[in-house]
Length: 163
Picture 1: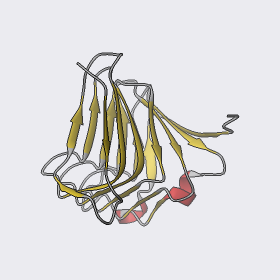
Picture 2 (picture 1 turned 90 degrees about the vertical axis):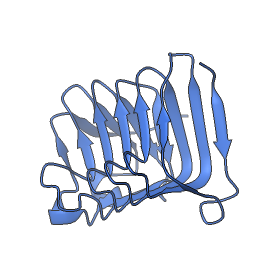
Picture 3 (picture 1 turned 60 degrees about the horizontal axis):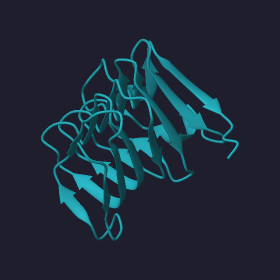
Picture 4 (picture 1 turned 135 degrees about the vertical axis):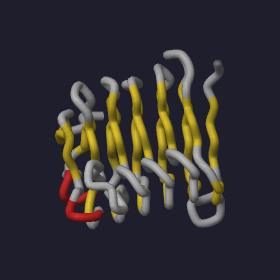
């Protein structure tokens, strides 16, 4: 019911074993910065409902399911994040969700371990992944199992951030 910030020292020195499930109403905003989430038994970062989340310099590693999931929530962002070694998709966006990805240090790699229906970047139906230029699907989502770097029925597109 309240907004929160979780700030670590760095990805190398602040390691959390497990994942985060973020939910709440539209007024709830969750900021997560400078840490690593490792070995989640489910989704590494699960944004579900109407709350929004913003990841900055976060590494999500070795999730038993998806690395980062966005479901139904629309004001989300990732900047300079790494998602790797998830058994399912690296980043999944569904149920009309939206996430903006920025930062030249962003990588989504070595996910989709033995899962033919998943992708490094995976969007469903009316969902969207927005890549801030100069990022491209090909530059951030690489080496996912079977070459399944991006796909799905939703939208993945680039745009110029005019901040």
